[in-house]
Image (cartoon, rainbow, N blue to C red; front, side):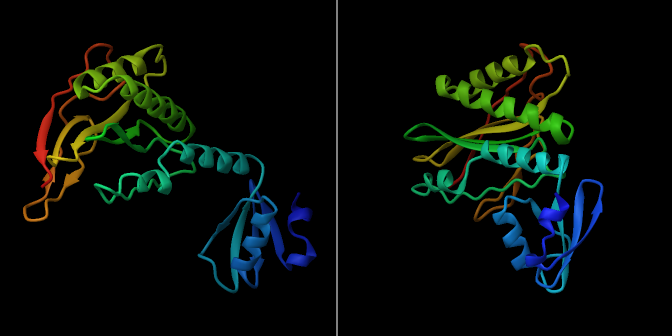
Amino acid sequence: WSSDVCSSDLGVACTGVANFLTVTVADAQETAAALMQRGVIVRPLNGFGAPDKIRIAIGSDADMASAALIQQSFLPNAHHLNNFKKYLDISARMRSARQVGGDFYDFLYIDDNHLIIIIGDICGKGVSASLFMAASITTIRLVFKEEKNLNSAVKRINNFLCYDNTSSMFATALFGIYNVKSGSFEYCNCGHNPPIFSPKNDQPVKLLASGRPLGLFDNQVESHLRQIGWR
């Protein structure tokens, strides 16, 4: 595979190390583009420049890169976020410590006047966290298709994640319902690091945890609701 990637028409010199190739090139940006057109996973080592080095993923590293793309597909994309521009400007990004991880977020309309905002994380890192993340975000979306009450929805999500959870994985999450007409924000923080609400003309406020993480105790989640005004 290395002889195919490091062909003379690209003018690169390669050295193989573990699951990647370190490539020295005269123009990293142009070479990376040519490699990616061939379906090769490419990462800059020091930022694209000239001269520079790039890293080409092979073997299991390429599989992990594919897994990262699949995980990203579970999150709202730019087109999805544009659907909310009528009421809000929303920007979101996830950057995992590893190629895949347990962080997640989502935005869902439950009716014309109410928007669900979700920020969460799975215990641990890597593949195990990413698998439980996929199960968690799928469960959350299915529950909110049927359940409009935040307190009831959180309890149902917890019970689903507890079912057959022999690995004792758990999720922390903040669930909030934003009323686009009144500007009120009702939320439940299930053990998540407190997000910061920064009012335009007031001091920042931490949205502190109001209940336990999800997936640990069947029928025992505490989902105390709190409310703040966004306007």
